[in-house]
Image (cartoon, rainbow, N blue to C red; front, side, top):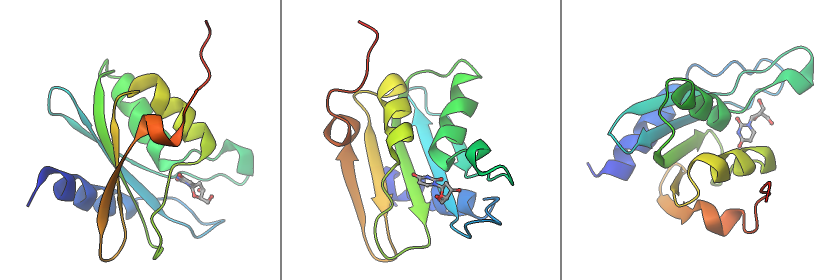
Length: 127
Ligand code: THU
């Protein structure tokens, strides 16, 4: 199995741990650091809806909070037929920690790869 497929399979596994009682929309993410470590994330919702955190950010914050700031790629899985792209806030976060990175998107039958730069051109920067 190739590396992208493996990471996507891990995102599918992470999806099982989603806490999504309000939307019912479960998302899993799996990221790979430049030193080969994988961090998983799933969306975590809250009765105060705005406190919800997406799967991608959970994975990124787990990595960064353990000093792993060089992220190479992140895979995202949901239950939908369509590919699940990161939301706007997650795109901004991905642009901070993996500006040159790749996103692996999957559905039931296909996997495709896109670049963070392509889905958030001109991301916000403090300069
Ligand atoms: N969600 C993610 O986890 N990642 C995304 O990229 C888009 C949305 C979650 C947030 C919320 O728990 C649910 O999906 C519905 O919006």
